Image (cartoon, rainbow, N blue to C red):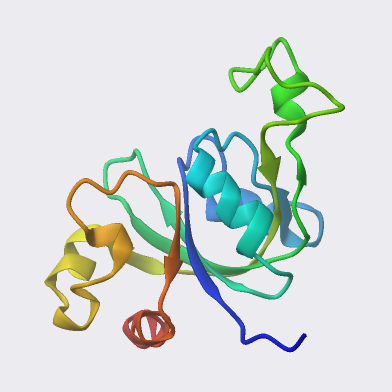
Length: 156
């Protein structure tokens, strides 16, 4: 099956994993742990493929926005934090035989200037971008190819 590349915006709190942390990791690869939303999990499990583009978004910080460009580096596999009783992401209902939470590995490609949420909202070409919709709280959202291209333009 030949499928076109897809694009994603993936949010991470920089004190947990920043674009700098990802770039410093071996081969620039980090496991995207801690996702505890079923829709975001389903994107990773069912839709993401190796090589898909990722906008690395810093959230939960003073100035949220896109901080880098990355790519999906693995197929989905069980998130080990769900089995770790000492982890804030522990899920006692999840078992090794029937894991509830999946993750993908993400490879950081480059750090960019911060494309702030304010700047994104001000760009008419991005007006219907899912992450900008009122009430959207998902940590992972699909990105339309036109929005991907526009963001790369804005990042220079």
